[in-house]
Image (cartoon, rainbow, N blue to C red):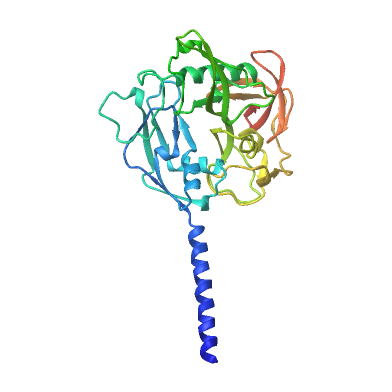
Length: 355
């Protein structure tokens, strides 16, 4: 009898131990190993799978993480330098916690744009192969991306520098395709800005002088400014220009865009809980500081007013404040360009930011 009870308890213990091991394996952090060599890509946007090896038991999760856009080439810049810290910020922006992943490898990696590289073949190039019905020497995607961008900018109020469109590499076009300029992308016809993977309708002329309709799949994202802690911040600490930075990152969902605070909206508030360095600020993690009644900007004092749109930051020095305000308050002033009354949020005793 005792022997049977011993065997039963042993069997139950083994099952419990196996479940515990399985649970631990299932919750193991995702491993991201940065490559050691220079990466060369053809597209203007850098995705995580192009610069890091992803180790994850779930294929779907690995694929989703690999598709996250990390950075974008600006204008004709031939190369980018992406750091581990930048990866961490981008993963948090995508909704992952620091405990969900572990980043190893070099502290930073250089990414070169293929169109600006005239040397030996690239060391690493993971762009998806094209499946086009037109000659490989002709890539219609830049033309299509420009047309989709133009239509979106015409339909929605958004800065051109904030909008990014990437057409699906697996693009099927008519075999007897005529001039690329004959492609007409139809209006979106929606009240809200299309974000994420979208399908656009278009018409195109063929060599047989007929017009055909086609569908174009593309990924649409917009750049937004987010507040990020540049150091560990304890609960109750006031957010200022000393402990906050502003990061500009593309978002492809409306929920992500609304989930984090901008730099100007965070300044003047306080932390409701401890925040780690590089944490993005969510509305639930901050509260309006009530003890910040000290007037920093006084009436008729001269301050510097900054305004940021996309990659461009414009500053106006020696602007006279028409009202007074504490940290995070809005003060009024006469805009140097429009000569109209405007407001800006106080960042310090000598600066304010236009939202």
